[in-house]
Amino acid sequence: MKKPRNKKYQGPKYVARNPAVTFFGGMSDQHVESLHSTLIKNHQAMAAIAQGRGDPEAWNRVNGAINMALVFCEQGIGNEYVEEFKDARDVMLACVLRAKKTQRYLFTGDELQTMNAAMSSHDAQVTCCRYIDVARAAEEVCRRLSHRINVASAHD
Image (cartoon, rainbow, N blue to C red; front, side, top):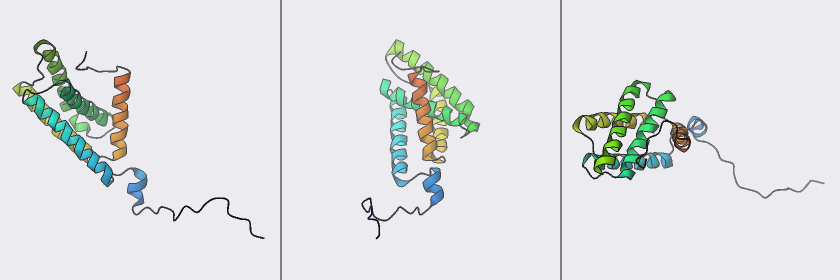
């Protein structure tokens, strides 16, 4: 006599069309959409600061992008941009210190050039890496923020 089945039938198993992308962390359509919306928000925050409409939220978003860029460099993604990102980090610190005095988040002309170069380099980093790399970098930035490692906040 045949033993009865112990579990309910779940349907056919998943078959990966492209195993390399599925199992090694490629950018799926959902993640690409998320990436594009994040890049748009970053550039809107950058534009707000450049136009003098910046606030602590916009500063935090741009600062987060620069922090992600530096973590990407540590992970070996876009190492050639590391000096650009360090300069941008210094610009962000100068911006927040100036904002404490003037209550305005605004870049000077040279700072704006530095930030534009850094943001375009960050865009290049993000568009040529895997989603899993983006997730790891975001986790590392959050870890550093929660442990106050190398951070400057607009709320300090």
